[in-house]
Image (tube, rainbow, N blue to C red; front, top):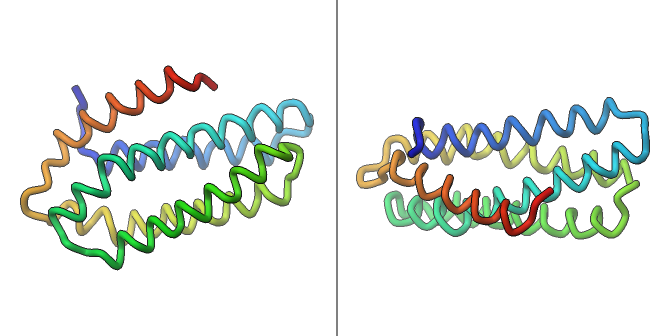
Length: 146
């Protein structure tokens, strides 16, 4: 059972991925960078999936804010394109930096726009959503261990 609401849980994922990007940039060993690139891609794919399956539909139902939702989905699609390129070329540091920039922009959008709106929305049970997000993330991580 989640001890925090869905926005905090999702933001912890954001922070964890940003720490991985920092480790990636600090790593001077090509093999270590490849491992971190794979881990970052996996974490992001799982995170995006749980947002799209659970958080975004609940957000849409509670707020009706299609503009924010469409923007977030567009950013996810762009991130998936970059991830596919990285998975084909895990030694490409330039792609990793582009992905980091895109993710940082997306995280800031969620933190500054979507999450505050979600917290204010009537009918959005952020604690129950956190439980659902945690359970689904566990399932997905089991299916695709890093």
